[in-house]
Image 1 (spheres, rainbow, N blue to C red):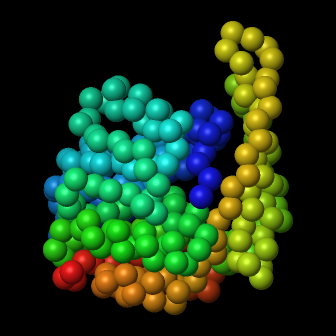
Image 2 (cartoon, helix red, strand yellow):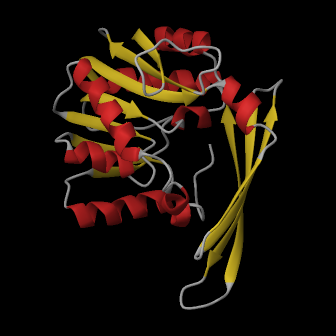
Image 3 (cartoon, rainbow, N blue to C red):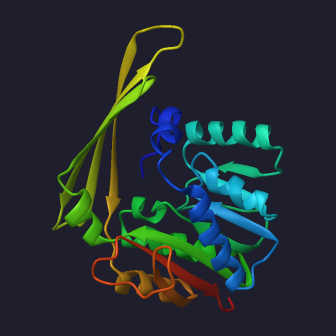
Length: 251
């Protein structure tokens, strides 16, 4: 599971087209619908802490876990600016440890797709189950195979900004159900007109809903619902992102 390194510095710049506030409203709605209106919440794969901050602003007591030191440094800067009392932990989600249980765990922006082995994803779900309060809620999303195969696969995305540019090449290997991201970054050096090139490669796994459901049940969690992202509709064959609701049902 690759951690973002150089891309972390410009991640928020290139993600400024993501409607995080709307995504946050949807996530808060799902939490409240499942009787989580306050309390301790873990953001698993929190990245630069944008959603962690949104949930903290809504009154939740937040913990953020990510395996990228560079991403967490930016999250810490946001924390200092906002004044929110957020605990950030540099940990791999496949083996994270908490000091106690939490009322809910959330994991969005396709963090689970970075877990490319079913056995490892099962372990993530088991750990979530272990650290949830009795009847605690787990909400996560994942990119679908349809998205990798029909939208991202074998496509190139490029953006040119004043301070940085990137070329994002995608290759979808259908047999392995793996999407490879090759990132070429050009980041302007401070107080200079020179740009330094960085390269990173990341991999995501395409999971289908039946596999996700099976792994949830095997982990000890109770599968509750699946939604076509940002709606309360059932997923379709053309869903690009699916949200899952699961619950701790007694260890």
